Amino acid sequence: MKDPIAIYENLKEQYFKYINTAFSIDDLDLKLKRKKEYLPEGKDKNNVLAQEPYLELIKPYPSSGKKISDLTLEDIRKENGTNYFSNQEELKLYQKFCLAGLVGDFPLYQHQIDMIKNYALGMNCIRKDRILFIATLCLLG
Image 1: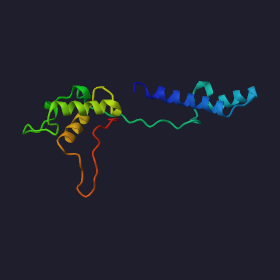
Image 2 (image 1 turned 180 degrees about the vertical axis):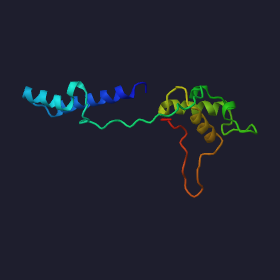
Image 3 (image 1 turned 135 degrees about the vertical axis):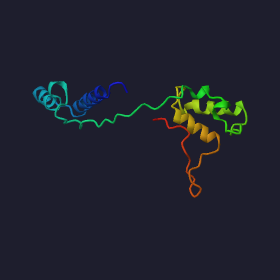
C-alpha cells in the first residue's frame, strides 16, 4: 500500500458517486448542494461519508525471497534430514495444488515459509483436544 490516504480519499469519492447514482435527484441545484455538503472543495473535509482512517505503522514483514514454486526439499527438512514430503515429486504436487488458486506465485514472507515448513514437518495441529489446523499460508501477512 503505497499511499493509504489517497486510497481513503478515492474510496470516499467512489462512495459519493454511488450515493449520487443510487439516490439520483433531477433538481440540479439540489444535486450541487448535496455535493457541496458531502464533498466541499472536492474532499470530505467534514467526514460526512466516512470517519478518519485509523492507520497503524508497522515494520514490513521479512521476505523469504522465495516463491512457492522455488521451494525445495532442503528448505523444509527437519534437523535429522527427514521430511513430510518423501520426495521432490510430492513437493511438486503440493506446489501445483497451491498454485492452482490457493496462492499466487509471488515472493512469500518468511513466516509463511515457516508455516509451510511446520506443515511439512507434521506440526499442523495446535491442540490435541481440538482439531485445529494452522493455516499453511497466512495470505495477508
